[in-house]
Image (cartoon, rainbow, N blue to C red; front, side, top):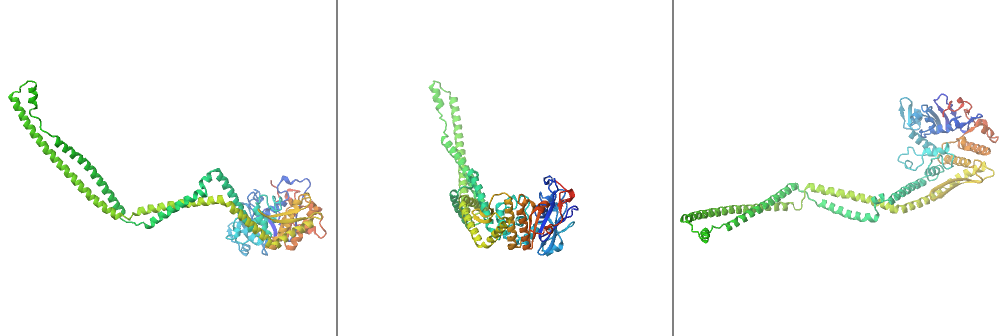
Length: 587
């Protein structure tokens, strides 16, 4: 219950409320035009300030106006049978100021501001109100109410104090309220299973993601990245086999500490053997050359010159013949020496070749021994490299499996979601069947309100089950003139006021701004006030209505309705600057 709204702004007029009927009147002067300013008298601003004190966002809020942002607004509420006053300023909107004794009584986690004193976070304040008003768990962390698409205090309480944007449709408390939020909030307030429409929104989200994914896949980019189930399955099977084989190799691998040293020695021996073979080739070429030289080395023909001279008729003198004999003897000695030298060089080369063969055989024996030792073993580095290879293939396999899942989603998720939708619809039908009494109660509340409001019209509250979740629709027969749609909003709020009280205790207040009754016949407005008063009295709560005084005076209220005592303080007016709620005007 709301007891007061106040401020440290000196010109602000404290608003005082009580149980039962509360009519906050504004005297509208002749010639006034509320469009000129946003707070001519302050009726709608009263609802806005109430939401501010109930934890609404401060962004773009009336309280964040530069002329109000540094002032504290206070609200006094009746919570758990205790008067609790809280304060809030838009300049530090995350803090809800509270008296220490009130915070302790409500077991709130408080902190201390050096300037303003004790406070709780706005999040904890909203959670506390949700607990006392609507029976939400406190804290909500770790519960189903902490998940996405669950009922929140702000969504629920907005049906009990509609403000601008909340007068368009009965089901929506604000212009931007999402359909899932409407379904969840109304289900909760009427005592139905809110988790069903919540689950349906989860399916809708998946359907939207699937649609986007399919659209992207058709474009080619995503399709190429993901692939198809048929393409990916053989790749996965092949890679799984490879990983299994590598893992087997790792399991059987035996590490030899000196493996690298030994393998290096084997490699060096092989390199040395190759070097010797190259040297042997050169030596053999040299030996072959020497052997050919020995064969080709022959003494000169001694009588060749003499035969040549005789052939041309010249007789060589005796001295010349003797000279030839001396030269021949010398040449014979040179030939003999050369043969000896060639034979000696050949022997040296043959010895070198023999040494090279012996060395090669020795090296080969050593290398063969090392290789026999290394057989069946490996170096630690090789084991690490093998393990890295296994890890790489496992990562590739994991990525392929993810792509496979994505491909399965693309190809089979639609069927799964259709099944989910069908199951959710069946759950919804079962829930409405199981909670028939709660449905009947809400239908009865709306039906009674319509009967009281109209003598010549009938209507009903239709709560249905469709593929897209629960539907809540109030239908009043006849033409849509005379503010029918506004009265439908009143009827739903009236039913929620009473149903919520029966289910969770409720906030014990229902606030209607005068805009709700714009265009509504005065007879229906009068009956709405009577109905609201009766409900407030019945529930020990309060019905707060803001009206212009001239409208209020014209309402055909029954004699049993005490007009004067229903009016609460103060009487606002747009007659002059100081008579409004804030005591001054601003654009």
